[in-house]
Image: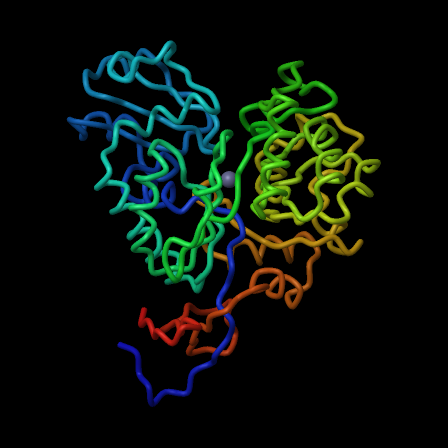
Length: 381
Ligand SMILES: [Zn+2]
């Protein structure tokens, strides 16, 4: 229980500028293949097995020997494998599903499950001291369903809608804490799935990944954003994707790049008025897993510190549930990359409107016991 007599340390709460709140909830409510054994889960579940976290694709034979829906998503979230039962039920063309086709997989859940996922996830975020999140959740449900899920959120939310045909009325404040304020586009995929769009082929596949947008639709969306005061946020990982997109960011200032893992040096001047939501831990994770070794590039590689030192506008984020949702994890990895502790904390609390109360002065060494929202609500954890 929160002890008001105790001397506590008041500090701005963390702001996570890129994550997937509902997916985090789904991950918490479903299974994690990084921690659980697939064979055991297949035996245990009888109605549905929805799990995420594999790195090497599980064999199709194995999951096809079970006659209930099985959906297994890779750690990166860009590729999945389903058994024949699911394929039939969701009318899929193949057992292996990529990128935007994966949206369909979430149709195995109903709306009450999404509401539960939001509650579980926001509780987890508040517990680690994050009171404000920029999140991307329009996956597997309609816009109206999403609004009905988000409107009861306690945590402060800035929603980025993954839509290609935005309507003006979609972007609004839906409660005191929740604003739908941005459009999220995916220019490419991930390095793990070899779908990030790169200039030189991957050393192992000899392919260059994929560009997921059409030039005329990009223009249309940036124009829409400009006309309606809606921010455009683009997932960009590969250097070729960044090269294509940089021209738009130059012509449409005030928008956002998410990830920026491979950036050609020559395009940097075009990105002066662009915001970057970056994930320092991706550098450490990808280096340790050997993923960096399959990239052949002359571009800047995970240039987060360089962007910061050159005065680019960057902020930190987890991209949870791809990686852990605790800011302390990101800050630790940022310091390994060369960010100072002070800068790392600054980049993670930028724009915070709320306060967290800690027992220990070092906010990286403990979790808050309460959150005070700027509207006066006091929330005990
Ligand atoms: Zn993401």
